[in-house]
Structure formats: structure tokens, C-alpha cells
Image (tube, rainbow, N blue to C red):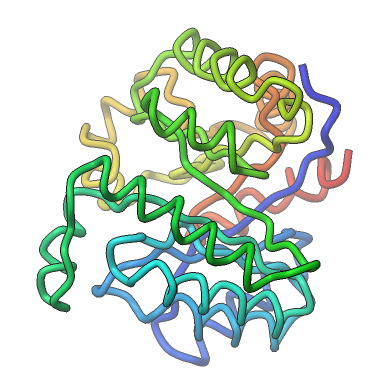
Length: 273
């Protein structure tokens, strides 16, 4: 389905400056394309953290994803444009409407969480501001898509679409999601890079946070054919990623930073191919 080459990202956040530098440099040394960072008041701010990451290693950086309700549209666009400028175009702007848990944080900083429609409108407004700020230099946009309205927005505006379904979503449903996206994107379809995030890779035991993130126990996740996992030997994992590219067109794979060494042999085998 896709002739796009594989590339890989690491999703993490700073526990300290020293630890962050170590993670970023390790990711770059192991051949990862991008260091990606989530957004939320429970974490350090992604924008200065990613600026630091881009300064200590020759690697792309990206928000995964910035929560639109946590800032005004103009302020978010300002932050994104600044990173594009400072990194000389190595920044990928991942933006979303914010998970339900973000509502409490939005209230804490005195902003309005809004309805789902209002938050999608915030995303659109943010992107419109960014286009004006960027001028001739265009920041690549990553949008997550799961539901029909998010899918339509991603089809119209995204350069990268992260397939955002829950951990137990069957393969047939992912295939239909991609088909719907391509139909909505029309002439843009072949220009969109499809991305998928992994909770874990390799053979190590799943960490406790996977139950909070996936909504099911590690045992249930392991017993399923979850696309949020990539298990097995290096060759088995590489074969599975090639299957996903053939079936869904997914070529941009990110993994939690806890597993960056586990996926590294696959990165070495597939990166750029």
C-alpha cells in the first residue's frame, strides 16, 4: 500500500536534564529519526524540552501531541513556530484536542476545556496561525485520528497521521480507518505519512503503566493481537512491521523510551528501507 521508507521515533519526557540528554543522544546514536514528547501539566513543558533535545543531538523533535486546550491557539502556534525556527526545520508539530484527563489541567490554568467541536476548532485555529507565522517555511503537522471528525480534519490538514485507536482495536478496523482516511484525503492521500505508536517492543515484561494507558491488564494485552505491541526476535519484529506497512501503509513507528534499546536492532535493520 505504501512505498514510504521506515523511520522511527522515541517517546519520552525529561526526569532531569542529565537523563534527558542521555536519552536524546542514545536515540540519535541508535538511528532513531525523532524524539517525541507528550504534553500535560504533570510533565515538564514540551517546547523548551524539545529545544534542548534538538541542541544536544542531530535529531528531529516533535510534540506527541500538544494539547490544544492547554494554551490559546496563538500562543501554541507561537511556540511551534519558534521551535521550527530554532531547530532549522527539525520540528514536527503534533497537535490534538486533549484527552479527557486534560480537562482538570485546563481548569487549573484558568482556560476553557470546551466541547469536542470547540476543541477541534482550536486545533484548526492554531494551524491557521502557524501557517501565517511560518511564511515560506512550513512546519510538518502530525494529527491523531480515530473518530470520523478527527479523521476528516487529519485528512485535510496533516502531513503525518497517527492512527489513534485503543490497544484492543482489531486489524480489520485499522485497515478500514486507513481506507477512510485515504478516501477523505483524495489527491493528498499519497503525501500523508502514517504513524503508529508502540507501548512495548521485544520480549521484556510489560511495565505497569501499560494498564493505565491501554485500559486492560498486561496479560490481556499480551494475549491479544494488539497493534500497540511488537513482540519477538529482531527478525520477527521486522517482519511484523513490514506486514503493517503492506497492510496499512504505516511507515513511521514510535516506541516508549523505556524500550528504545529493545527496538534498536529493528531500527538498524529497517531504517530508511
